[in-house]
Length: 128
Image (cartoon, rainbow, N blue to C red; front, side, top):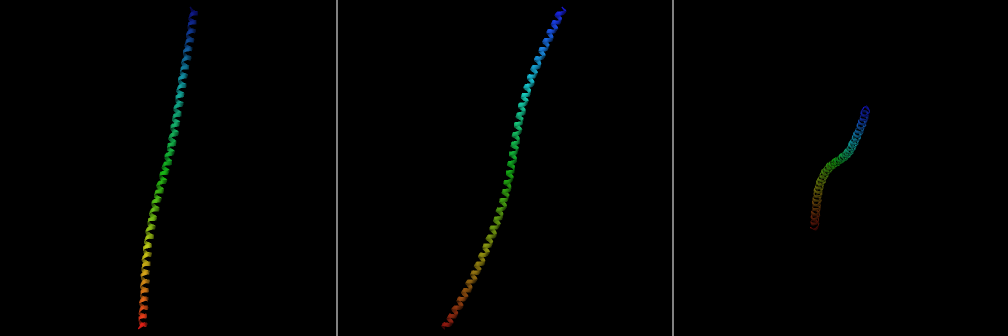
């Protein structure tokens, strides 16, 4: 009877050890599956972070380009205003020069008319 109990105890111990080993193997498989899922999630998170960084850099580039365009626009606006002022000044100068030439022409014409009148009067005096 004692021997049967020992055999039964040995058999139960072996069964318990086998069950523990199966449980450990199952836990190892579950742990490996969890690690695999964690690696997959980490890779996805890394890819998402890289994509976000690329989008951030692109947004910075676009903002810099927008600012450059704004500066160009302001520069062109200032240049346009400067050209307008220059054109207005040239136009005023042209008008002043035109008036001066007209005045000079009138004076020259009046002088010639006076000379011709004087010559005409002289020639009338000589002919008389």
